[in-house]
Length: 116
Length: 108
Image 1 (tube, one colour):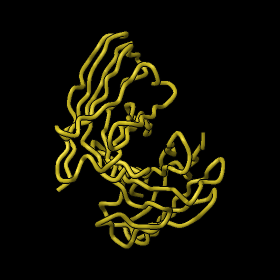
Image 2 (cartoon, chains in turn orange, purple):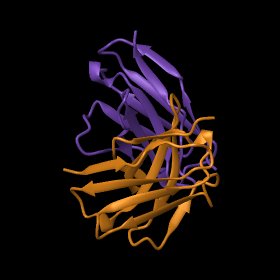
Image 3 (cartoon, each protein chain N blue to C red):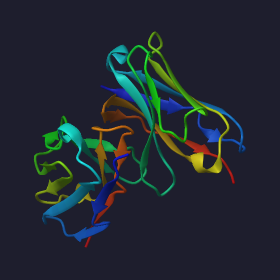
């Protein structure tokens, strides 16, 4: 069974940092692109970042580039999102997802709150 | 950036009725790289359709996707109680990947 479990969310002051993690099981992690997608409270879905199987390619939504860093550890079957210079508008549930362009499997999400 | 516009915003229907959801793109979606997701309150989205018309694993055949270019449709042939949810379309033919704003299917 495919499982993705996010952790690391919480409340952080504006300008602060958080590191999200996603532990995966049930599939060969190193064979798939992986992504982060977020959803602000009561709002729609927004792609954040994606990373290639070996970590050699990364892409970001423009508003996150330079503040967020996606990475992975294939030996640990884990995906990460380092978030710096957080703003109130970054408050959202952050999901990790197995990617094929579309998002085939999702974790349950981890909530990040940045008070205004 | 490809902007996806979903309509209607809310669809009020009864169980057993047919639901037709629309997703219109601001420019042609290459290779019909269009997906649909279902999201229930407090849950993660769930992939229903990819490639505009291919059902994901385990998705019942009452869900079907159609369309090409800029106009896409998700049809639920007969609504079951568990189908009342929010539905999102997403394109993966261009960068960045973008989602529509969602259509809520609610009980009439």
